[in-house]
Length: 228
Image: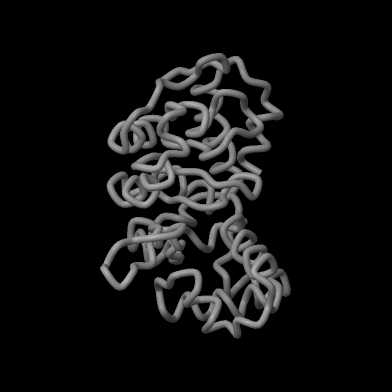
């Protein structure tokens, strides 16, 4: 699929169309950013963005599940959908050859990151509020969110779903709560057996080549901002 920066993506009007687009492009920011026209926000029809009924905010969890993609704050601290193969390349580049324990042993990980990661690694999958409570829960929400963003950007954590609180009547309400997982837990052997199969630099070059193929008219510096 070859895109251009003007009117780069088709208009999306359903959850299935968004899931199909993620599978097709392999690499889709959720919100407008460094590359004009290249995001879910800019292709989802306005009437499905903020709506009293069903729209993008309700689609996120089902799209993650049905497309099998990775989702999270993966690109410049901003959310994105990546298919498993492209996420694996991004994680390899960001990890720079280190699993988390090796990063810690070499003095490259922060203590709070390790505390949070160790709990998630042991449990495999936790809602954001569960993870925060198990990790002490005393810090401000923005500080905890900063830790989670950092772990996502480093390639050690993804969001696998958004789940809603329910009322006494069993009706969902509020904003969806992120369910965090390690990619090893989410993708299994397809990730763990291949994530370090080649050099981080090779992964970076493949990611860049893929984006250049999608966005041939875009400045390389903007594409590099996406990769990080």
